[in-house]
Image (cartoon, rainbow, N blue to C red):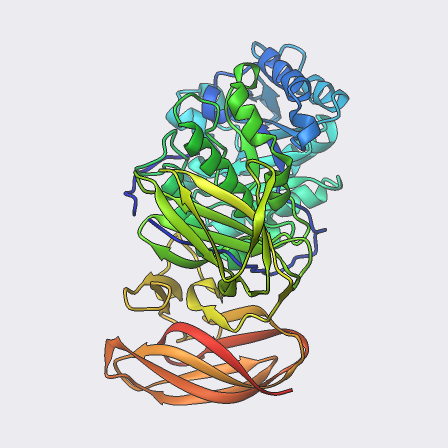
Length: 537
């Protein structure tokens, strides 16, 4: 819930294809949908507001559209008593937190709460809420989780990091302790959101249902932490999302009378195709009808709630015009979701090439905003997209074919963290790389590897695997395919701006395969992409 600053970009054509990541022991789920109090009310919340919001969710058709969580964010705390027991603010919540949860549940909805990983809440630090001092989970993890989930009856918890940052706590240690406390409560099905304001490390994909990837979203389209900026931060994060575990782009700013209708549609459509939790942040009691129409569009919600649980990936970009796409409905099937996002300040003609999304034959295109089929096309579909607007499409081919090119920026980087990357592998900009990005700082330790997951072969067989790389000195690369290692030795292009290629023969099994790139002892070359060519089945 902390905010900072950053500047934004240009016109992107991005197409997002399926990307699936690590699975943990928890049941696969789709991103949560609901409402949260922070964006509009910050710590100025009370019992009546929460109850009236629950009423509005039902009366305005949001529950029927799939929005089921009502989340009470920071501001309900009443400090701790002399024995350390957490109290609620009796002036704001006179009937108590359990009564509010019971009211929400009686509406057929689910109740969520906020807490802090450290000692003091964000509200106590940034909003002068003295009752948040000492109200965080630190030192009370098991005690508070027992209170939240078993005594008060809540179903979801968002855990912030303001106090923990001041204390200098280790993120992995403290959030894992909280995950264990949630498990120790014995209550099933609790959703856990890690709100560290940037991707804390791949460990979070094993313990949380969702995790924030940025500081707090601003109520604007352009500029630092505006809609476009948040989208950019999530473009190359698809490898860390999987069913039940999602990159959280923060609560939505729609319905707050700042964004244009095209900007609101982009905001919602992109949150859907990128598989972010859909948490409404406006005052639902006065939400504009135009916003309601956008966020209750069942066909676009379906992209977010698709059972494959995939986050879209970037295929191409030109400035701020972006084409996004992913597989939906059936894995390795012939249906794709596509978003043509125009982040520029003027209308642009944008195109989706069907070959880029592995579709053959006549391709039927459906406009998800108008809920109408627009026709059958070959090779590509092109449309004029308004400034800051997004065309949302469902496209279905006569058949599909295996993906053969995999960009480095879409790989799972085992040691990646956005907090303090040090020498860990990361995605870096590279103007002459095929997707404008590379994997840099790969290798140097056994666990600093990159992996392309779900490399699908319909037939299995022998393939040529070509690695596109950069290296100003001789470096070695270990290529591990389904646990079989191949060594590419002495890779060298003599400078960091010249690209080289190396090709080896490999075997893929029928179905999904994993291709890992590593060097356990020394740094590997920078990686642009890999390509596959079937030789024999």
